[in-house]
Length: 130
View 1 (tube, rainbow, N blue to C red):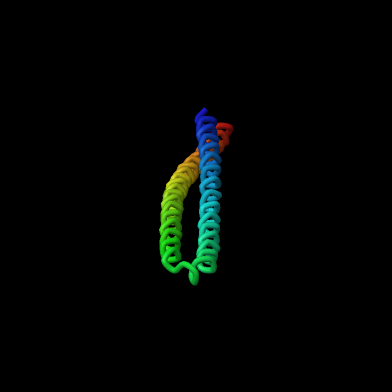
View 2 (tube, rainbow, N blue to C red):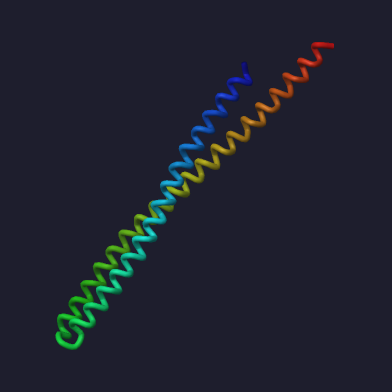
């Protein structure tokens, strides 16, 4: 009976590990998407700055400065939001990894207990037959 209870516990840990691995995969994919969005934001900013330069630099210097400043502020705000999201995702990833390590430790302990119980049952069973 004890062995079946331990096996059930191990199955619960397996299920929990599976759920945590799924969360971790989703979080890592979101981190990848965040990095992609940072790169896209930088590319769009560079194109915008380039367009502003060629359109306003020589013909309307006052408007050029205003547009450049606005573009830079918008870009910095967008990067700040993306960095905030990335930091949150990193924290989530670290928490999930910590939970996964904890589950792995518990699973390892229960696996050793199961092995000891099986070994104990086997040796006692053999001793009783003699």
